[in-house]
Structures are given as C-alpha cells and as structure tokens.
Length: 79
Image (cartoon, rainbow, N blue to C red; front, side, top):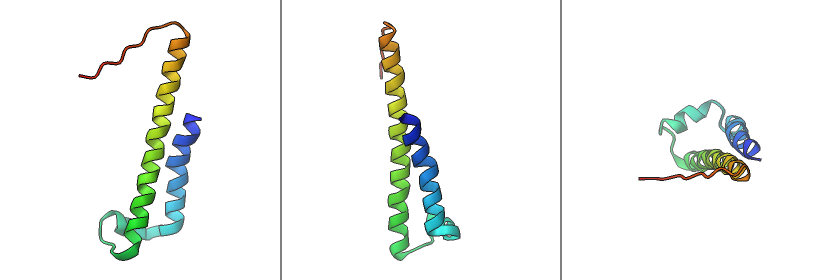
C-alpha cells in the first residue's frame, strides 16, 4: 500500500500536471504566472508531495511493525 501511495503521488500527479499545464508549468514554477493558473498548480503540487510523504510514513510504519513482530525492540529518539 505504501508503494502505491508513493508512486501514485509521484508519477500520477506528474502526469496530471503535465497534461493540465504542459510547457507552461515552468512559468508557474518560476513564479512568472499570475492569475488563476498558479493556485491550482500549487494545490496539486502540495497534494503530490503530501502523498509522497504519506507513502513514506506508511512504509516506515510497516517496517517497524515487521520488527515488532520479530520480537525486536525498536526505540526512536529525537533530541
């Protein structure tokens, strides 16, 4: 499931963004575009990155769950 979410966010939204904006995406990314085009692009970009981060969190959760099932104690400490 983690891979599907990650790849779906990474590739799926890249394809959708290319289909919707085509070559004008460089102008939007550079901040040259104004009006209604920039906000939808920023929202799609945010959703894409969010799906990638959620996919990564799911993968980490799955790996930690696997370690827990193996009887290994896992401690994560953030200073």
